[in-house]
Image (cartoon, rainbow, N blue to C red):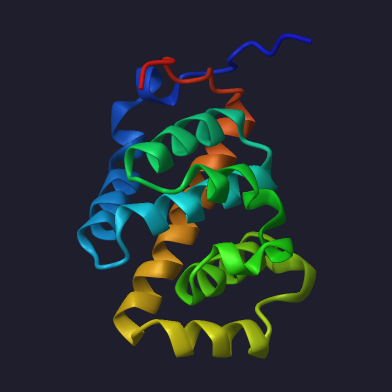
Length: 152
């Protein structure tokens, strides 16, 4: 099955992405770091089934120096907790629950893990990063956005 891109939002209205670029600027200016952001974006993209974003963020993870094993087993991170830091585990748990928020919300246990691993300012950055990638995923999946160029 071949999917044809339904619409290019950038071509139709380049200003449509302006708020998203502002969110990305905020997220990347924070203290979470590119390796953690790449894991968050990759995990949300896996859950949301977004090939465009998954392709992009796996490459970003490699560029940011994320260990390849972490990327390879990310979909099953709970089965390999020793591979990830406490901050990564807390961020991945929050990423999953926010991405799937309609199921059960965000549990107190996950929230406690986040509070133990991150400052309040970092929690704000984390929530914005998770929110941003979920918006990007929804836009890309809804429009059947083409894969990015395969250059690293």
